[in-house]
Length: 138
Image (cartoon, rainbow, N blue to C red; front, side):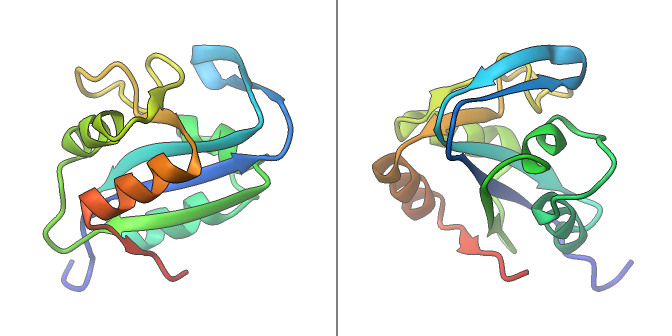
């Protein structure tokens, strides 16, 4: 599998109005207008994963898919090649002022309470600066 990039990432999704979404087995949730930061990892291929997340049309597989298929905008930032582990990136987001949004979102394989956070512009910029992520070019 040479050439496959592995890493972690931040995915920012924005809703221009309040949106009700049933997030798979997690159930229904109301997302207020604004921007949310999802923290994820892609150890089997960063480029493929981010391309998938940034697409509006896809089969629903991961929690984040339920948001990316209906959000107004989305953008990805990658932690590569020396990436921060996914849970460390989630903890950094919260330390920067990101507000945990939905318990259990995107973290069924770890001990974190969530990997989805509500952010404003200041918090978003702080997370990007402190995590040293780079904008993903799709």
